[in-house]
Length: 351
Ligand SMILES: C[S@@+](CC[C@H](N)C(=O)[O-])C[C@H]1O[C@@H](n2cnc3c(N)ncnc32)[C@H](O)[C@@H]1O
Image 1 (spheres, rainbow, N blue to C red):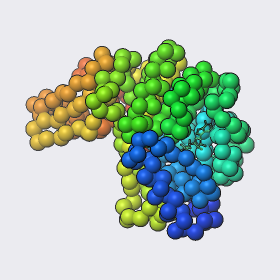
Image 2 (cartoon, rainbow, N blue to C red):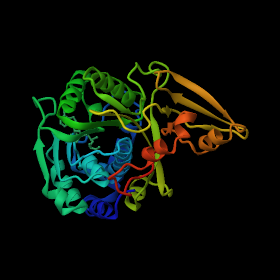
Image 3 (cartoon, rainbow, N blue to C red):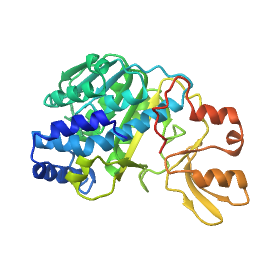
């Protein structure tokens, strides 16, 4: 959910452009994000395109990054994240989302398009004076930077898709080297976005990173070549978003592919499998497609007669984790997976 202060800041800034122009720029972006033309990457190159992105794309992406930060936080009993490196920051989407989950006191935001910085500053100011005061902006090409300064968390949100494969690989390596604790990379949940995640994951594993999510293993992805690993989440649509994009529903579905890596092994749910498709909930059983800790994709059928597992399976969601019966039966493990110490109730639900 986008905080009201951010909704207000978006509305004030978007008022600079007539609504029909925003709608036109937004429709063009939606087409590129859908992955309809896999060879065309997103490029935001005008004031109207920036504001259309702020009004229609920033809110869903913010909510996705917020979910991923929550997932990272949930996997550790203590995770000290106070600084963020936001690479390809645009309107500061990732920094703002991280701020919802962690106490962020300093942030470095880098983008080749310095025109974003005024917008981003206003967004950070709306989120909190301390956050805005601790933000530093650098205009430049991410591929030209020799190294980045160390930060607790590095985030590349919807940006590597705009780079060629070699540059994206170099960026992931340098970003990881600057990540003191963890790193989050996220792209649209299209085959193209998944391809970028696969490549990023390979670089991270080569750097000895711990893969925290979505994969419960460091083996090659069992889906490669026959499917693409992605997830979806229902994101709230703001009134402005509805005006620009049409439709009356108060929410829309955002599909995303992602990888979260960290320096330390997660303290919770280490052996849990990931639910990689929407569970099929039938009357007498539930079918779950899982990515397991051995690196295999596996379909399991949970019958109604297996009472406890069936109850859990009825509540299971695509993108969630699925624990083996012995782990699920252990209340200590369960609690630590759901309630990370030191994290506030600001955490949204996992997908
Ligand atoms: C789609 S926007 C995403 C913005 C923001 N991270 C978000 O999640 O909403 C991609 C951003 O990455 C920036 N970007 C892409 N390639 C870049 C590069 N090589 N160097 C610096 N910035 C880059 C673009 O200028 C743009 O602002």
